Length: 351
Image (cartoon, rainbow, N blue to C red):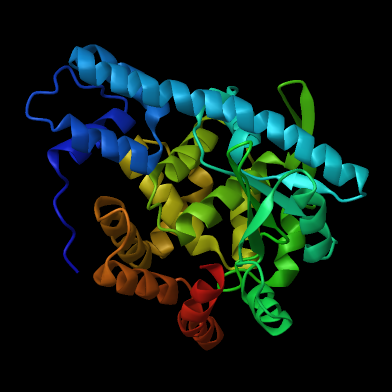
């Protein structure tokens, strides 16, 4: 499948990601560039462009940066209230991504923009935790309210997260009962991600989260499954490679045990391609042994990154092929095909 040539706006963005800020915006459609930053949630990198923008356009970009930073600060206050309420009810709550990752990885909650809160809850019935959250002003958005018990059972068998929205606070919350992606990750492996946790202080509140090694592996898993359709996921991977001291031999061994090493490999190659990130030597032998397969998977992801924000039919087919190639076992391929079959029904339950 042909990889489309990047637009001038994409080329400028990609150079910026590699640490080469532009000196001119001549020939650049700044409206299209703005949409690229919005799609990939990369406005924390936009200040370098401000001096090159026309005055009216510059104000639009400043507003986008400012409002997203303020929203991040607002989200941490809501998250603090939420986790305290859950812990009071005896429910362990672990924020994933969002403002805690911003602080943990960048040392600044404004350095990473996000649109919602993601919280993992363990060892609790989904209906129980939803009722607790609803008392805080949230209402269920997906699956849609009012579905039958049979439909609820079907949904929870295939999806491990629920969406709730607080209209007064303007906050969308995704409650995860597992970090399991049942297509690529076995349920027994989920507990490994939470085997070792650490505390991160954000805005005067301490939050429990996965340790650096497992956070890094989770970032590659989450972004890799989505083929880094939004580049801020890949930015997180690149930042973790550069800033965190991690035993990468151990990370590779864990990924191989879980059989998600190819998602990790693609993440490493994409991080190097888009951010000039150095790949730790611990991965050299693995990358060389699997070079041909990883090249195919990487090219498929590049097509997703440079393609439309919401994949067309060709993009969706490409993603299914990508998923099929991740593992050679017939069981995995059956899971991928089954997921395609279930997606339409799940979509109807989320509307």
